[in-house]
Image (cartoon, rainbow, N blue to C red; front, side, top):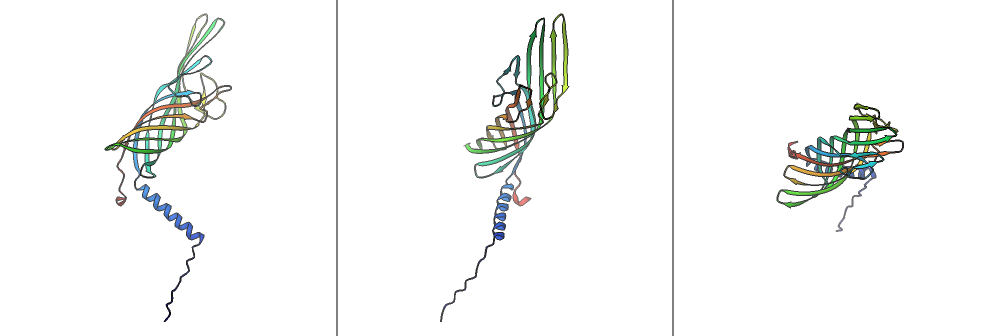
Length: 253
């Protein structure tokens, strides 16, 4: 008696393959999403407007003007999405301060000009970073990473004074709102700024349980200020503290 082996043809169409890949990606995303941890973020910014790539804590001089760093802050929320055992994707949504202090002295025969103003710029700031974490000791991790950020200007202020000396002293108080608009900016003491910013961030820090302390440097790649013969970029040195909420177990969703 002959043994009969029945072979059932298996036809895998492109549509079936796409469905299979989609299901695999959906499962992977769902598994990762179940481990997402949200966190509250608050931090200190040391900020400046300077030439592209310069650190914010270094004064920047352009002709008779000196641009120095000022204090600002950030506040918002972020998420931690695991990409592997030690790799993580971290987006955030922040209310973020930039700006600079300007000290300018100029003179013409018989007259001198002095300006001292603080520029404060506030953005909706969206950074996305890739982090690598490793254990230092029990419950303590160290990490490093890099990423990009996108920002949209919300509002700003310019405060200080403009002093003219020559046959007398004229002091003009400066207290105006900053306008964000595209194109070539008007000059001081009433400048305008680019409404959009895009840049890079390099960061490192330490993590203990649900707390994470991060230090970072960010530099803009898009001009924050575009003058007729003069351009400036945002630059930031930051410390921030993140409190991560416990992730919700998948079974309780």
